[in-house]
Length: 151
Image 1 (cartoon, one colour):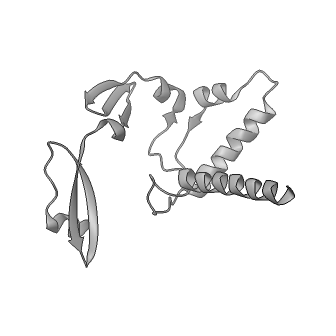
Image 2 (cartoon, rainbow, N blue to C red):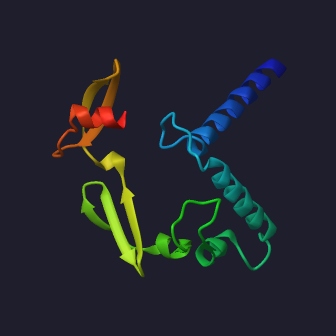
Image 3 (cartoon, rainbow, N blue to C red):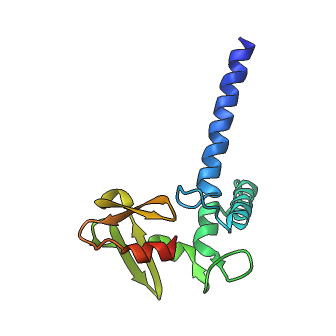
């Protein structure tokens, strides 16, 4: 019984660790490592600490997110001061299938829902490796030269 519980605990722990790595260290379900993962994780830890610290106070994590601003610096990749609360509340309009956009007070927000887009898959061979590229239906496929430049 003790071994079965240990195996179950190990499986659950490995699932949690792998899902954490997939969401935080790798970029968009690819094997490429996110160069900003350390700063992103430190921000998550800081926000988690602040939410625990202020849990019984008059400030919650929602107030922090809607009132605080992120400014350019060494730990993030933003080009200008960015108000998180405003960007989250911008209404988005459908531009085309799976693509939504909105703008308010010089803040532009774009959202792409890849599961709503119909894709065509093209296969290219670059340096003996097979490269598969998904292109939205109705769009032109990239040329072999373009794919070779990218890869």
